[in-house]
Amino acid sequence: MPTTLIIMRHGEAEDAKGTEPDADLMRMLTEKGKKTQTRMAEFFEKKGWRVLGIFTSPAARARQSGLQISDHFRAPTDWDLCLLNPIAEVRLLQKLPDPNDNVCYVVIGHDPSITLFANRMCGEEVVHGGMEKSAAVVLEVTENAVGTAKFIGYFTPRDAEKELGASS
Image (cartoon, rainbow, N blue to C red; front, side):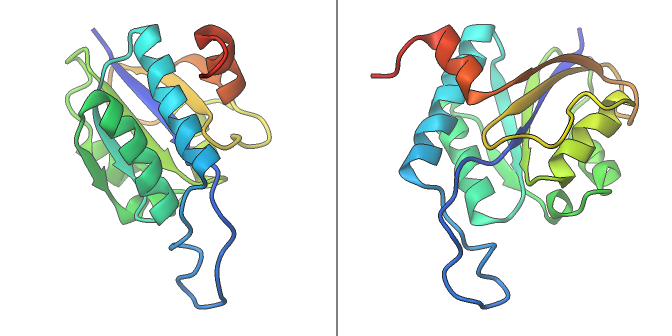
């Protein structure tokens, strides 16, 4: 069985505070961003994608996005600088488990690099114009190599709400 790889953009974040070089990296999720990430985790579970691990960029908003999903699935989260680099997929692919383990992992990063990663994994443009916040590209991976993944779908927070029903 293939590995399910969910490639996500981080949730809605607050505006940068200040002009320091690391101000963008310190941006936190808004309450809406946290809630949306939790709803996406619920959506993944309803779809049968049981997340076993999460990889995020080191930016605060990406790490928080991962923690919202981690809390739902009780899955470990790891961050890596390679998720700030649009062409660092080789390093990320080395971290993923054997793709024949029938498991599910989530990768959370930033646009445009996360969109480029999803498209490169499929060997074609499956997402046009960039991923919206908290959106996910779902792939089936049978080998850890670019251009070999099977595109399952692109899911937005609106898709999750339609499937899950109105939020409480």
